[in-house]
Image (cartoon, rainbow, N blue to C red; front, side, top):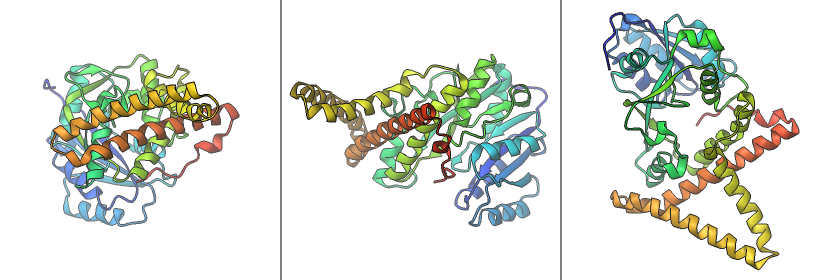
Length: 348
């Protein structure tokens, strides 16, 4: 990254709720940043944690005096409300969103702020390095699936990119303060996908979003298939609402899991009445499993032979949960059922 003569002040904002296992590591990562501490303020929006999160934060504040840390209550408990509360409190010229479930390199803020200047961007972000929650085969398989195009399509922040490029969205984000002054804050109706909607508004306003592959974020994936299903179901559920709010057409990446689920439903029903349809249905399913098997075999080549079947199952969970969630979201919009989007706070 190119150097810049005058370093802007930075507000790091982070939603937290029941993060006693992770918050100390996150604060330590901020403390280890190469960016000058006198230019950084940290704002934690706590969603009424019921564990020792606040105690851990206070212990860190007492131990580390060079880092300005502010804790504000988030009675709404959900991420978009937390982000908006923190942004309103922020005084920095640049606002960097971070998450407690990730690990960051020591030059994370330095590279992102530099990227804003170098690429004349309005929002920049890095690439996820999906990591197993623990050493279990299941967790490794989930990490493999959520970082593969078969699992998540062409999401560059998940599958990676060789060069910096302009994209539709980035993880977390490093924003010029003027972005929020120009297009407003995060949509608090979106318990999930609020970053997609916000970045969509940025693009519609002619703003520039750049992904920087040198910036790598180690992100810990869900540690069970149940949690993986819940997460992608919620992503699917809120995606039609995002599309509606932005007045856009859905992308092919969004529609493929939906069409797959519809194919399964009509395929099963149709097979009871038409043998020819059963042959077609079985043939397509066979090709689908062949694709998943070939992809899963690459994990075997990496020396993880026990991951073969868990990887296949991870792909299945991602595709089915997202497709089902999307269909529910579409149906809720058609029926005007806003209560379908009132889900519990999406913690792990």
